[in-house]
Image (tube, rainbow, N blue to C red; front, side, top):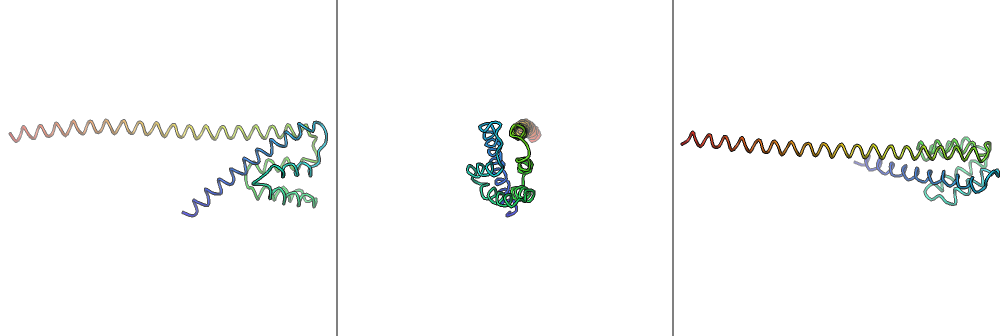
Length: 169
């Protein structure tokens, strides 16, 4: 039973991380939009992300400290392994490109990631809705079959009882 509880809590934590990563991507897009074509340093971007993050703030802070030691791959690996989701891995790929790509290219790449995240959420929601619809359909069919069987059993029991009463008379 503890395994299921731990798994459920881990799933909720990863969902909260993904929600915050989605907000981070939106914040970075807004930041690149506001700054236009001005080149923004990665430290400034991380500091802005840290300002508005809640759950992932300690992870970003630790990542920034590793980043400032000029161990960028290690910082990104720390971020990816600590959060442990596909979205974190995708975002970490963007982090590695912060100082090498222009704001326009980074913004378009972030928009692409955000759209993919939205599409995955919609697909997951549709799968859940389809599963729930199929479950309701099966329940309705089972209920109809039970009612028909009940009717059949009642008719047969009444017929058998009337036959026994004729035999006994």
